[in-house]
Length: 133
Ligand SMILES: [Zn+2]
Picture 1 (spheres, helix red, strand yellow):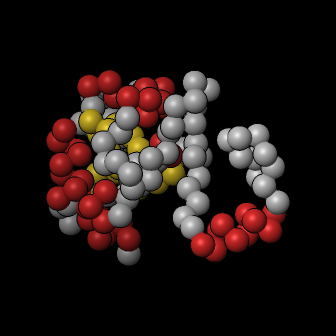
Picture 2: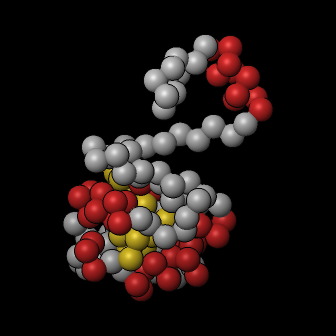
């Protein structure tokens, strides 16, 4: 492990730190801006917003045409239930879908579209249960 001071930390110290403190993984973009905020903040940072817009063209609900740049930044895992403000778990949702998915999570099915990309299928009332059978 390389410290900010340039010193190399022996592995035994890394293990001791891991046992006695909370190590936080930090993901940064090329400009050194932090892209994974974990539980530190609920709202996406400007750097995260830019990174989300580079990944998504529109709202991440299937068939919704609202451009990502007009969307709110949504948490794939709801913040209120422990979701992280990490780039790989953020995406654009229009105001309607952001609120509707929060209020009615059972109406949406999430799927992975790539290593850092998600999409959601919206089900009309009652159809989500049928699809799962
Ligand atoms: Zn939408």
